[in-house]
Image (cartoon, rainbow, N blue to C red):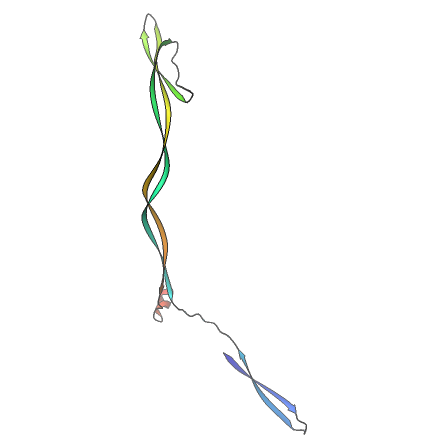
Length: 147
């Protein structure tokens, strides 16, 4: 926007007359205002799809081996571990003229670890954003929604 500004200048002429010259000067000023050009709507969409997933699985199984011992002992042996093998004593009481404990057998339990690769389908979800440009509402409708 321009605004005229009046400026008056006087000067004396050589013959003693006085001359007045009027000038007009324009200055520019800039104003800003917000203009709504449209609206946008943003929403997320979740999609589910099947995808194969690979994994390495390991399992530990035990093998039980019965080892016959058949000897008499003075006290009940405790369960023990020797070289990764768990040994569980199995005993019985035998009546003789006196009572004695005879070790009948030991259970030697060895862990065996196996590994396998498997491929299984699993459901995977992913979100994506959908942005839609909306037209400007009739004058006044936007202002009511903003309040």
